[in-house]
Image (cartoon, rainbow over all chains, first blue to last red; front, side, top):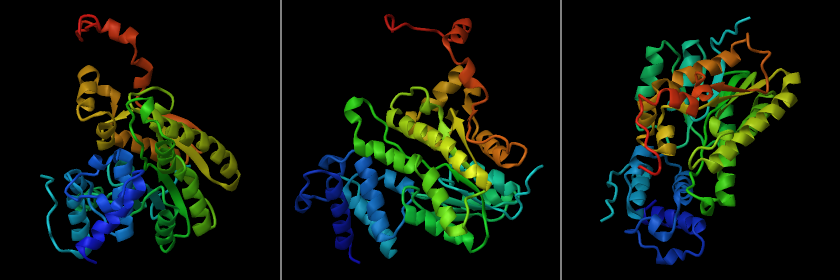
Length: 90
Length: 272
């Protein structure tokens, strides 16, 4: 599975959670909140992606995330075992 | 007649921290074979394993399972079934809810999310146990909170889910008691855990301690009460909501604060 595959999973769950969101317009350098995700949406996006990818990520790592790219990196690392580091959300 | 938990299967959902972990340890100290579930997972499982070892308990089974997903809990129960013929104790501690800041935050989706994770598992987990083991657990204990009956800021929908949990407890006990199962709920108040901070803010526990340290209930105290409900001598207690707060809910009121006003400078809304 590639990092792009993981991004597609996250974007899919984000589009499911946020009404009216066009998945094709999602910029991974932005945060979930910037796309209108509230706290419940964020939980559902993250847990849904983890479930689909069959990975688990500690809560403390999730709390550090600031953008979608960071989440993708964390999930990809968990899936592949390849350390890529979480995005910092500049 | 005191029950012997040695070698008996105990399942605690949301069991890797706070009340859940304390409960797992309490049963583990008494020899139980404990399974702890988690949704997000601890950063490092080793401290949990070390705590059980230090307590002289069997190594616990840590399993990722979302309490709101039936497939997950069935899988957990099948794992227990591979080792035991019966689930002795089910503690439904896992919970989830969305804090709200106003009526505008209310949503059917948020309401259902709270029910799915915090109330319905009391039923779904019992049903799953019946399917896997052929019978319900000997003891079922849910973990509720005072927010089911009293107002706490932001707790609107979470409190509603807890109220549903407590009502389900009564009916579930009525249905299952003739078949040898006891169902009860422990209702906590302020327990100093990560969940308390997540719900009410990082400084909340320190704020409470400032006014009355005894108001905070240690997780271990809640855990021992849960064990007590499953220990045998309290088998005549069923379908009940048992408040575990050291009595703090009885005396936290304005009459006491007035008597102790010399200890706590009070500013009115006008002078603040």
